[in-house]
Length: 407
Image (cartoon, rainbow, N blue to C red; front, side, top):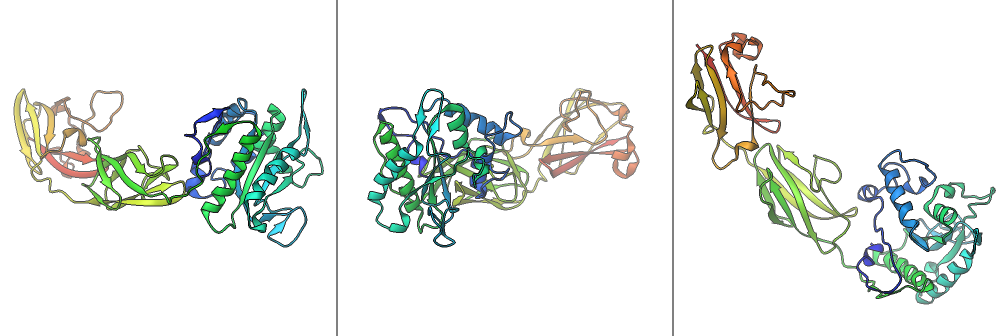
């Protein structure tokens, strides 16, 4: 949320690279690392999974930068000396963290502690609550006796040691009472570091408006998307495929949606088949900001029409009826027609028939079927080889069937 205030800035001088949510999956789950701690993967040489691929992208952005800031929040309140269990050297909240006080590169010496203290001194002028004031934390990562050896795998240590740029972790405390307060302190630090680097932005107002859903655009069976307002409902039939193509909120970033009980933690722009009532929740990061209800109404498919060609002549039957032909007749299932539905919404499968294709998808329309070749009697009704079912499905849901009767 802190970084979200910066991507649209106009800069008077300098450049700014903003990555508001590097680990979006973990944000949605509200977990430090769904696939493990991403901030302990910067020592990997080659990507092993999607998190490592993201880390490689971040490394590439670091290579373009002169300073790196990593935004976090941590438990408690950092203090150089032990005060109590919430205020001690092993708490990270309300601190600016570096891996060393001074770091020497081939061509320069980076005064990390000096930079951090300049920023902290200016920040603390604006912070009236003594407990909330910031402190500098040096993890001394390069020291063999460090108490924080895991920091050698972190983003800040990689930026410092591989690219020779100052790198800092900015920590607010998880124990602050409001989200707005956490955002404000992060942005105090960011703005002071920008000033330190002679970057002149049009500073954002540090105002927090609770995120909320306005509407979603949802398509059914790849049709034209419908605009559904927050709290409203969309109606489908069993087996319909829905897709959320747009989420409109008062925040443009960090949005995801979840079709409850189906799909994954983020179903945005994914095709999801629905067979029973559910809901679609919208999230801003890990906060639910609105809901769209999905109602499922059963449909009577008794008027579904099956269109055939039998030896070149057009014929048709309705749901559960029989098309009577002679063994040896050549037939073709042309299509199925039902009210305003498109035939492409359905799969039409003649049980016991395998089309002459490399892959049998179960779709048997528009193939010439020699009825003398229907010999897999186990697929016929009662195994007698006389009555052969044609099953129409929508997704995994059977909606209708008719029969070919061989005389």
